[in-house]
Image (cartoon, protein in one colour):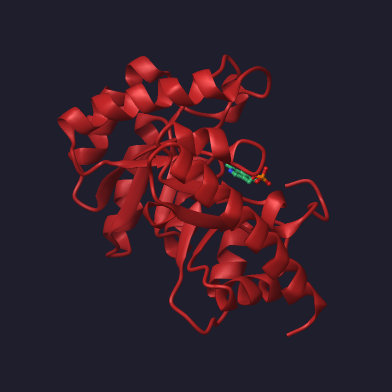
Length: 231
Ligand SMILES: *Cc1c(COP(=O)(O)O)cnc(C)c1O
């Protein structure tokens, strides 16, 4: 173990304390939460350190980096999450490495994911990305259109509808956005009880997300530090 390992251990210990406190404030337990280490821009040696610290869930936002990192040989079986926007022409590559796609936000993408998963004889978890602000460049479907897209996922054979994902708006209070997401999740679960994941909360806002029902936290900088390049 080198200095980097001890740095990550320290960062994770601090985050874990904050996660536990936020969970207990909202009457939840930290063991109901899954921390996904978003390792984009960081090397596979960091993935190995995080495995040693107990992480089994890893996230990437670019298909090429996801493929490179997931192809590496690790000491443990891992779950890979594609958290970034996904272009239809990269779906085959994404499905090769990903276990869960967090960014499903249009019908064409559902069709492409289903086709790729069937071809690769793979069962793929899918979250509907919900847009909580007016910026179309960040992806996501409007809250009012979530159920219709979810039906489409549920009707496939190789995709498993897992729930919803969102990012807080860049400006403003994340609490109202995450509260909206929680409502969307409730509506979705009324029709699809198994679709109970809420992927929400990044390094800057995970406590607020926990207070609004997040089940899967996507932690990048708060865990790994400042990214070496923009990702
Ligand atoms: C990079 C990224 C994260 C992690 O963000 P941090 O602010 O570094 O914690 C989470 N979700 C998505 C979709 C990302 O692209």
